[in-house]
Length: 330
Ligand SMILES: C[S@@+](CC[C@H](N)C(=O)[O-])C[C@H]1O[C@@H](n2cnc3c(N)ncnc32)[C@H](O)[C@@H]1O
Image (cartoon, rainbow, N blue to C red; front, side, top):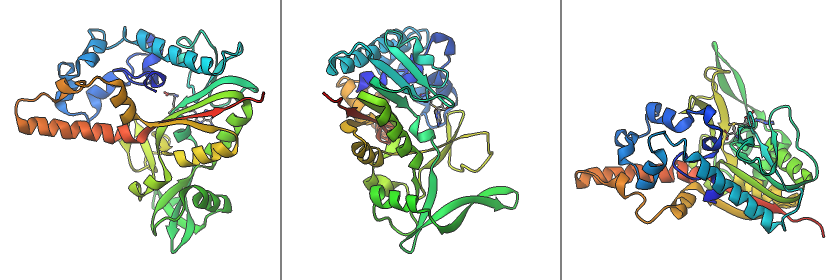
């Protein structure tokens, strides 16, 4: 799994794009993200493996082995399929198709807004932070019924308005994938995600669907009583999604239970489902975090342990990878 994610100190697919797209998010976040503890902004306090990747070029040279690991992971998937000659890698939400160079040895098809899925794909359809960018319906539970949340005006600002009963398909989504919810629970029905999954399953003759994204399972929705809609602006998370329209990206966490269950219905069997924390732990050495934790006093070390735990079990718990497989007809 770490290979698929391209795990390393630059850590995720943007780190695999050509060097001219630097600086990628890590240097930017080190400068500007208030959530990163001061001592961890200094590379000298990082784990040895991470310092080695960062080197004196901010990790540029480390891109090459990461891209190689990712290619090797795709080759292994191709082998699992019996190495078909027309093996193709389709990337959804590919932006400017920056992965093209890294994946040049495969037939690579980037799909973004305005593009469409090719037909009869034998290979891998993968996405990183694509499903969370799709539109959702917002709703709230009130007295056992589902009510739609719409956007209205309060003075000169956009505001959420509790409207009438939610459309039938939203209620079906809730019952099928989320089940009984407590009064006041806000949730999103990701109908567009299901439509995309159908599109993918129909286009895939045989192969794998790899979905990497922030998400949750139905049982975990209680952790998000206010729903999962979030805004991002310059890599900073913001809760008020209606503020500054057009200036910030709006995302909703992906309901992986819905993707798994709906996938099964359309011929995609679950192959693997992992949290980033598991992946990082599995890819790390036993003392990977020793340097990050080493501190002058026991109190300091305790504090650093807590920060590391928050990192791994905050983002590390919500960022997940789902691998589904469609087996071709004999
Ligand atoms: C958050 S970005 C992720 C970009 C890239 N995959 C990455 O990891 O950096 C989401 C991408 O999905 C694309 N996208 C959103 N809705 C889409 C749709 N309906 N069809 C195709 N692409 C879409 C956006 O244009 C954008 O490039």
